[in-house]
Image 1 (spheres, rainbow, N blue to C red):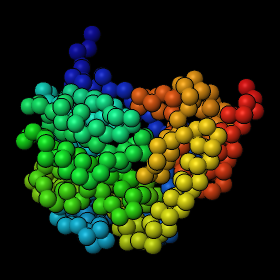
Image 2 (image 1 turned 45 degrees about the vertical axis):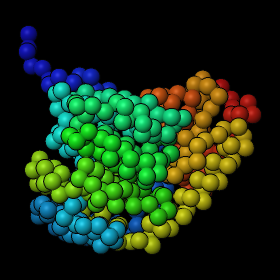
Image 3 (image 1 turned 90 degrees about the vertical axis):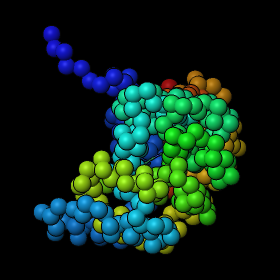
Length: 363
Ligand SMILES: *Cc1c(COP(=O)(O)O)cnc(C)c1O
């Protein structure tokens, strides 16, 4: 009998479920299950990626200086306080590895992003789930859950899958109320969709206990490349760089991301298109009896009358080749998360939900 056993916590991890991308027997599915940019990456990013083919024999940059500089220039941030990772997932993992371990607690919210719990368990720490208030982060509930063991507090603002956010003043109150050993992680994966929002950067700059994570997977349309970054106080960035793999990002990924962030006009276009179709889709769904909270992201969390109705609508949409995301594993069993697609996709999904609501769906 083998005595090979993994570290405590690892066998408690439930595998992350990504968005569905295939339906057996159906061609031309519309994928609205992973919050991807329906318009794809910028032309400049694709050109940079193609050019990277000529230097594939070279190791990539280890300090990511060129990408960090570009991010700093475009967003008005201090490049030395940025760390880049293979998606923001890697930044989340590095934070747990560095700051949370056996005996430590990692706070996440009831409907918070699934990777927080997974990475807390992977580090041997104890995930602590805190309730939300009507699908909105509740600062008082988080502060009440904090104690001498709290190592990290994760909130996504705006959050996935709720699409809601809390005001900067509330986030500041959270940061200021944390115990001295706790670090607040502000996940800004959807920050670019909120007009005039800095993702929490100014809070990072005025505190020693806040780090912001960002990603190229959403508005920049580069989910397939795996590039994310963190912006934090120097003492935290120094710690994370010690455990980060020296070649964690390929040169193709670094170059494409740099071109993407410099293509500000394309990001503005994507933000405007998303806002237009998001408003249209949310209104059209509400008219047919499927309400949602006002979304500040690139998806809508559609609420049904019951878990059964949500599951039946999900089955109908899937049969129509329209892939959306059930949210039962986020404690939201009566909801479906629908990514804002391009105009034809949004029209198709609304049409199919209407069919379902009118009892015209077969099966
Ligand atoms: C999509 C998403 C991310 C992005 O993860 P990457 O690893 O950068 O692709 C991070 N946080 C939240 C809440 C998300 O929804």
